Length: 112
Length: 113
Image (cartoon, rainbow over the protein chains, first blue to last red):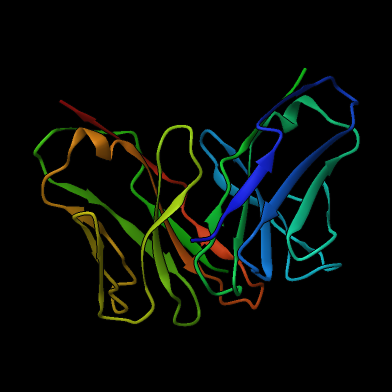
């Protein structure tokens, strides 16, 4: 079964702070995704990638950067964090863009 | 573009009663349809998927039939348990070539003992 891990699991920062969320998958999947989950909005796609060095823009990319350094590792960067980015962030991976996605346990980010 | 509309929550049921969570979709092509479940404190996990029209998927007593004519994929369970309390998401593969899943807004289910 696919294994997707995220770190940190919880993060508190201040407005204007610099935050990096990490995701690693160990199932050799090509596709990786970053979502945010907020009450009333469900899952919203921020960025995704189909391989090392590739980056695709999702539905809510403003204020976020992402980088895929290897097949296993996908990072989400918030360079000037704002309170509106307080959310629960999930990483996911899939073998292809048409397959089921496997989700990590989530990172809860609070921006004060 | 593609979209998924599902039953607005929260839904509260008593143990042993039946469940239906409606899911309707719009898309230009013939997608694969998914139901995901998210338990408290966890990430969403696949409940089941159905790649072909007129076929049924099932898992853990839940089932849904891919109805291409009605563009629906309603989730049903005959008798819910307290352990079924979770958020349920309907999803489909995108037809725009963007290689992503399109998720509904989720339905929060609480089952009372």
